[in-house]
Amino acid sequence: MSDYLVKLYELPALEAALKKVEENGFVLRRALAPEKSIIVDWVRERFAPNWADECDVSFSNRPISCFIVIKEGEVAGFACYDSTGRAFFGPTGVGEEYRGSGLGRALLLRSLHAMWHEGYAYAIIGAGGGAEAFYRKAVGAVPIEGSKPGIYRGLLKRKG
Image (cartoon, rainbow, N blue to C red; front, side, top):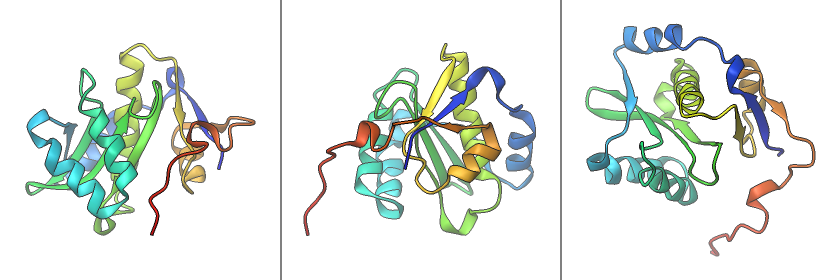
Protein backbone atom coordinates (compact mmCIF):
# COMPACT_ATOMS: atom_id res chain seq x y z
CA MET A 1 0.00 0.00 0.00
CA SER A 2 1.18 3.48 -0.86
CA ASP A 3 1.50 6.40 1.50
CA TYR A 4 -1.09 9.17 1.16
CA LEU A 5 -0.72 12.94 1.20
CA VAL A 6 -3.21 15.34 2.81
CA LYS A 7 -3.31 19.12 2.28
CA LEU A 8 -3.78 20.46 5.78
CA TYR A 9 -4.73 23.89 4.48
CA GLU A 10 -7.86 22.39 2.84
CA LEU A 11 -9.21 20.31 5.72
CA PRO A 12 -12.93 19.92 6.35
CA ALA A 13 -14.22 21.76 9.41
CA LEU A 14 -13.76 19.98 12.72
CA GLU A 15 -16.76 21.24 14.68
CA ALA A 16 -19.46 18.96 13.23
CA ALA A 17 -17.37 15.82 13.81
CA LEU A 18 -16.68 16.83 17.42
CA LYS A 19 -20.33 17.67 18.03
CA LYS A 20 -21.41 14.22 16.79
CA VAL A 21 -18.90 12.55 19.15
CA GLU A 22 -20.10 14.59 22.14
CA GLU A 23 -23.80 14.04 21.35
CA ASN A 24 -23.16 10.29 21.51
CA GLY A 25 -21.64 10.53 24.99
CA PHE A 26 -17.97 10.40 24.04
CA VAL A 27 -15.14 12.75 24.99
CA LEU A 28 -12.35 13.38 22.46
CA ARG A 29 -9.21 14.99 23.85
CA ARG A 30 -5.43 14.96 23.85
CA ALA A 31 -3.98 12.15 25.97
CA LEU A 32 -2.18 12.97 29.21
CA ALA A 33 1.17 11.55 30.34
CA PRO A 34 -0.22 9.60 33.35
CA GLU A 35 -2.52 7.72 30.94
CA LYS A 36 0.34 6.44 28.78
CA SER A 37 0.46 2.83 30.01
CA ILE A 38 -3.33 2.45 29.88
CA ILE A 39 -3.54 3.74 26.32
CA VAL A 40 -0.47 1.90 25.00
CA ASP A 41 -1.70 -1.37 26.56
CA TRP A 42 -5.16 -0.81 25.02
CA VAL A 43 -3.59 -0.33 21.59
CA ARG A 44 -1.37 -3.43 22.01
CA GLU A 45 -4.33 -5.62 23.07
CA ARG A 46 -6.64 -4.53 20.25
CA PHE A 47 -4.31 -3.82 17.35
CA ALA A 48 -0.61 -4.70 17.15
CA PRO A 49 2.63 -4.46 19.14
CA ASN A 50 4.20 -2.16 16.54
CA TRP A 51 1.20 0.20 16.77
CA ALA A 52 1.65 0.25 20.55
CA ASP A 53 5.32 1.14 20.02
CA GLU A 54 4.36 4.05 17.77
CA CYS A 55 1.73 5.19 20.26
CA ASP A 56 4.34 5.05 23.03
CA VAL A 57 6.59 7.41 21.04
CA SER A 58 3.76 9.96 20.71
CA PHE A 59 3.94 10.52 24.48
CA SER A 60 7.51 11.79 24.13
CA ASN A 61 6.41 14.66 21.89
CA ARG A 62 5.48 18.10 23.18
CA PRO A 63 2.62 18.49 22.98
CA ILE A 64 1.76 14.79 23.30
CA SER A 65 0.74 13.77 19.78
CA CYS A 66 -1.96 11.28 20.72
CA PHE A 67 -5.68 11.95 20.87
CA ILE A 68 -8.12 9.59 22.53
CA VAL A 69 -11.87 9.07 22.63
CA ILE A 70 -13.31 8.02 25.97
CA LYS A 71 -16.73 6.70 26.95
CA GLU A 72 -17.62 6.12 30.59
CA GLY A 73 -13.98 6.21 31.67
CA GLU A 74 -12.81 3.68 29.06
CA VAL A 75 -10.75 4.17 25.90
CA ALA A 76 -12.85 3.80 22.74
CA GLY A 77 -10.31 4.97 20.14
CA PHE A 78 -6.99 6.70 19.56
CA ALA A 79 -5.01 8.54 16.91
CA CYS A 80 -1.34 9.51 16.88
CA TYR A 81 0.86 11.66 14.70
CA ASP A 82 4.60 12.43 14.56
CA SER A 83 5.33 8.91 15.87
CA THR A 84 7.13 7.07 13.07
CA GLY A 85 8.23 10.21 11.26
CA ARG A 86 7.57 13.93 11.31
CA ALA A 87 4.34 14.88 9.55
CA PHE A 88 3.11 11.26 9.62
CA PHE A 89 -0.43 10.60 10.82
CA GLY A 90 -1.04 7.25 12.50
CA PRO A 91 -1.47 4.78 13.87
CA THR A 92 -5.14 5.18 14.62
CA GLY A 93 -7.91 2.82 15.62
CA VAL A 94 -11.36 2.56 17.14
CA GLY A 95 -12.60 -0.27 19.36
CA GLU A 96 -14.59 -2.83 17.39
CA GLU A 97 -17.82 -2.08 19.22
CA TYR A 98 -17.63 1.61 18.21
CA ARG A 99 -16.68 1.33 14.55
CA GLY A 100 -18.98 3.12 12.14
CA SER A 101 -19.98 5.74 14.73
CA GLY A 102 -17.85 8.60 13.38
CA LEU A 103 -15.10 8.29 15.97
CA GLY A 104 -12.41 7.48 13.40
CA ARG A 105 -13.28 10.52 11.31
CA ALA A 106 -13.32 12.77 14.39
CA LEU A 107 -9.93 11.46 15.57
CA LEU A 108 -8.48 11.92 12.08
CA LEU A 109 -9.75 15.49 11.76
CA ARG A 110 -8.72 16.44 15.31
CA SER A 111 -5.19 15.15 14.70
CA LEU A 112 -4.81 16.78 11.30
CA HIS A 113 -6.14 20.11 12.58
CA ALA A 114 -3.59 19.92 15.42
CA MET A 115 -0.83 19.31 12.87
CA TRP A 116 -1.99 22.35 10.87
CA HIS A 117 -1.93 24.52 14.01
CA GLU A 118 1.56 23.22 14.83
CA GLY A 119 2.83 24.51 11.50
CA TYR A 120 2.56 21.62 9.06
CA ALA A 121 1.19 22.28 5.58
CA TYR A 122 0.86 18.59 4.63
CA ALA A 123 0.42 15.30 6.44
CA ILE A 124 1.45 11.85 5.30
CA ILE A 125 -0.72 8.85 6.05
CA GLY A 126 1.70 5.95 6.04
CA ALA A 127 0.58 2.87 4.11
CA GLY A 128 -3.17 3.54 4.26
CA GLY A 129 -3.75 0.15 5.90
CA GLY A 130 -6.77 -0.79 3.82
CA ALA A 131 -8.61 2.43 4.68
CA GLU A 132 -7.57 4.34 1.57
CA ALA A 133 -11.16 5.01 0.44
CA PHE A 134 -11.96 6.38 3.90
CA TYR A 135 -8.97 8.76 3.82
CA ARG A 136 -9.80 9.92 0.29
CA LYS A 137 -13.40 10.70 1.22
CA ALA A 138 -12.74 12.16 4.69
CA VAL A 139 -9.82 14.49 3.91
CA GLY A 140 -9.08 14.30 0.18
CA ALA A 141 -5.96 12.17 0.66
CA VAL A 142 -4.11 11.25 -2.54
CA PRO A 143 -1.59 8.45 -3.07
CA ILE A 144 2.08 9.40 -3.15
CA GLU A 145 3.53 7.84 -6.28
CA GLY A 146 6.45 5.48 -5.67
CA SER A 147 5.93 5.38 -1.90
CA LYS A 148 5.37 1.63 -1.59
CA PRO A 149 6.77 0.26 0.80
CA GLY A 150 7.94 3.70 1.92
CA ILE A 151 9.30 4.31 5.41
CA TYR A 152 8.33 0.79 6.51
CA ARG A 153 10.78 -0.83 4.05
CA GLY A 154 12.80 -3.49 5.87
CA LEU A 155 10.77 -3.22 9.07
CA LEU A 156 11.73 -5.91 11.56
CA LYS A 157 9.00 -8.49 12.21
CA ARG A 158 8.50 -10.77 15.19
CA LYS A 159 9.14 -14.44 14.44
CA GLY A 160 6.82 -17.17 15.52
